[in-house]
Image 1 (cartoon, rainbow, N blue to C red):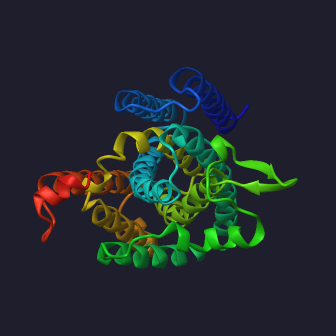
Image 2 (image 1 turned 135 degrees about the horizontal axis):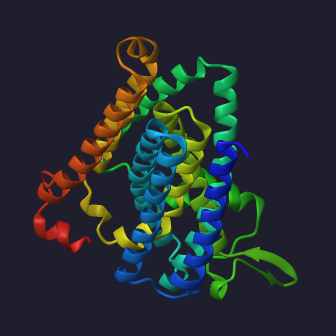
Amino acid sequence: MTPDQITYLVFGIVLVVALVFDLGLLSKKDQKITIRQALYQTFFWVGLALGFFVFMWVEKGERLALEYLSGYLMEWSLSIDNIFVFILIFSAFSVKEKYYGRVLLIGILMAIVFRVIFITVGVALVEKFHWILYVFGVFLLYTGYKMFTASDDEEFDPHDSKIYRFLKKIIPLVPHDGDGRYRYLQNGKPVYTTLFVVVIMLAAIDLVFALDSIPAVMGISRDKLVIYTSNIFAVLGLRSLFFLLRGAVSKFDYLQQGIAIVLVFIGAKMLAESWINQWLAKEVQVFISLGVIMVCIAGSIFYSIFMQKKGVPKDVEDESI
């Protein structure tokens, strides 16, 4: 077996064992997840991702390992943005807390399948048409600018989304959770519950976020293994991160700006790649990218914690959590 095949095999085995462990020992059906359980699960998935970083370092070398770590941190920080939208979706469809874990799991597994397809197509296009990287670079610059200047008033409404309107047109929906079912027969005909709608929306929304995150990770590394593994590990940690941060995500007022700066940095790096390669070795570029990602994300989180947005009274802010 080639080193790449060995790495993919190890990744697949780790993934299957981890999912069985998570589902069998860390999670129980229709059970509310406490903050402590969410913390343990988050440590589990982050520890697994960091363990794979060590394996990559030993098996593939320093540069690819650091590219993987940079990509993982990028995807992980973008996941926090996903969580805010997930909270809106659960709230809009009045999902009972005991169903959160099951619905999130199915939605995330579907999102992984879609991401694998999306990454495969994206990598194939870049290999055939290298100039697409410049399109990605411009797209990231635009996305970063829009994200940095976005107003708090621009709130996502799940009931007004194109995904929900499309589902209403093609399948019969009922306005309740069907006691935990996704589909059941009504007057001899199948109808679909709000839980089914939420699962589809979670997967679809993650795919929308992938339009930013996958070009971003391709700006960090061209290696297929790095792109696949960093994305999948970050998405798998979404469920535990949701339970850990759902009460505090509104505190991260400036995280969006931190992510926006990273997207602009990566977009500019993709556009100027041929010039940068003449001046800096790939290893140095990887260290700079990792440093920028860590400083921007950590800095925006700490700034959010210690600073208060203008015009938001402290007592009102606290009541909203």
